[in-house]
Amino acid sequence: MLLRLAVTLPTRLASGSTGINLKQALLTARLVKPQNKDALVRNYVRGPRDPPPTIRSETKTGQSLKEKLMGPPSESAYSMGKGAAAGAAGIGLGALCYYGLGLSHQASIQDNALLWPKYVRDRLHTTYGYFGASCVLTALSAAAVFRTPRLLELTTRNGWLSTLATFALVIGTGAATQSIPYKEGIGAKQLAWAVHCSVLGAVIAPLCFLGGPLLTRAALYTGGVVGSLSAIAVCAPSDKFLYMGGPLAIGLGVVMASSLAGIWLPPTTALGAGLASMSLYGGLLLFSGFLLYDTQRIVRIAEVYPEYSPIPFDPVNASISIYMDVLNIFIRIAMILGGAGGNTRRK
Image (cartoon, rainbow, N blue to C red; front, top):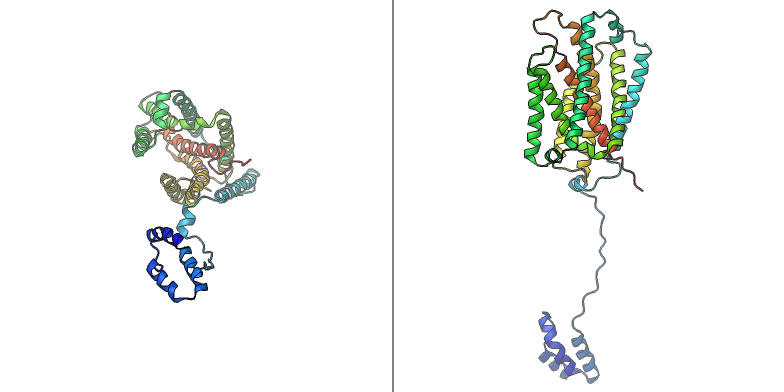
């Protein structure tokens, strides 16, 4: 027994034990009764016993606001956006039925079109002709950039410099196009307009990674949305949606802020998913409202613009507004169909 005690002593000292030393143990062993000596040495060899663990009752506390916002998103992160889009679609369908059946007693654009002179019709035809050509140029540019690896690498490059360069290029070509006076035929304004549409096609070229069938579906859905909204704008009273300019401008700031915030907050967090939902579904509703507003605004300008003005009516500038609305609607529909809007199906 004493041999075991001597062997275990260095280990206990090395471990920082605060028990009695060997001299004290032997001294104490002489003073106690013989039948208790073995028990005393045995207890010393075993070392000090740990106190029994205390059972603590842990109270379950809720997560803090920061932990909830920066945690993983829930399955219903995009539910509010989907519900808003579904509600807006229902309202739009009801408005189309209401105004299409002529239940409104106010004069609509369709009614006023019966009294339009020829120059008003020509202005609108030219405007929508430029709009259709803008869509074709953008599609051709996107396909050409996607098939060119070097250009595709430039458009998919991340970073602040590439983002700022893209913004500067889009805004610069658009401002240059709108600042050049309009003249019939092919001139400087038409060339600047073609460059602007080509730049926008290069910007959206990465959408081609979604695949041709999905982009075709997105184009068909966009055509249905644009056709329905245009029909509502034409069948509604001629000034029904012209009051929406101020609220739409505020909504544009909110959507732009949520899109820029997505650079720092990816949709893998709850807050990032909420911002992405606002950018996708909120942007879809916003630019649908812009399409209603711009359609009636273009018609009003074509009606009231003087026929013999020294500065002719500019169909290129008029077409850019509805072209940008339709392009933004198409981008968001394609991203939603591609799964960015929480439409991924779990197997």
